[in-house]
Image 1 (cartoon, helix red, strand yellow):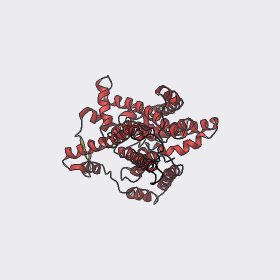
Image 2 (spheres, rainbow, N blue to C red):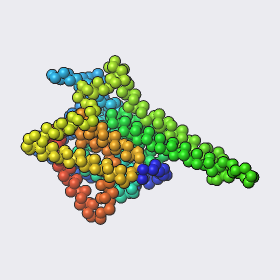
Image 3 (tube, helix red, strand yellow):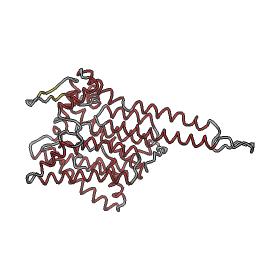
Image 4 (spheres, rainbow, N blue to C red):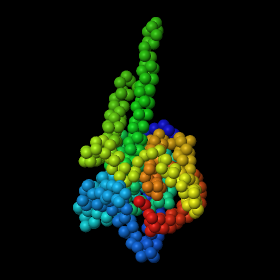
Length: 416
């Protein structure tokens, strides 16, 4: 359904018990991935823990946590890599946890990511269960866990934290908890630039809810209009006059506050960066340009793939990329055909568009798609219809393949 349906959420204890199979399955998959990574890294003389906590973006986040903003690297080609490109929520949490514990900033980042990945798995289950039922919810979590780049969920990166905030914000929208949705959307906006996807989902849902409420009000007003002169009566249908407005007022106020709250995180950080750099509201775009990140509608990505087709064996990699992009687009089309709730469609659409149409480092695109969990719901629905024995075999086989790939990937080029 694309209709925004508000349901009464189960009590917290009941919800946790219902999510337990999904969470246990998620822990098992992630434990397998970490075990394979540890064995693979040891065989290559590397530290699996260092790969998870002290490389690539993880170093930038811990540097922000330790020293604050202002650090940059100037490359020989003139590019400037500034840590202002990294949103602040994860470093804030790293700093806070390190301040109240003996953990280092890197250790704190790992702990935050592990806990956030569990929260994300629970949020994905809550959304999928709300839309399709408990069995599909379990399957959705397991599919998210066995993604080829699922190892990133256990790294000191911001993907798990962002996915947790996004999933629970979407669940709050679906269950009519507008203030919670807006607050979580604001926090998501402090985590990654793609927080705009959560804001868009909240705004879209609020707009549809407002339009439907106005239409229902107009319809009731028409039903309660005085009858034509001559019959001496007034037609009145439904609740006593004024009662519906009294009931709707708190929901309308919460919805309005959610609309106002949702963009504050992303907008606040972007404006702060603009002020700090002295380049105004678009200063953050200049910071991203220093990393050669931007939005060009996918032209740079298309050129990158086309160049791969000019030689062998890189043509095989290009064909795999094309198939992967085709699969992502096909899954989104299926989501549309299955009439997922509007907030999920908007969120997944924006995440996918920003990932595929950005001119950022192309090897990072699978990682950028990691938060787009609604794309997995059609596959989860199909998996849930299989016999339990068959679904276990499918998930188990893919989990092993994902663990091996994650260990190989992280010991090689890894995520940028």
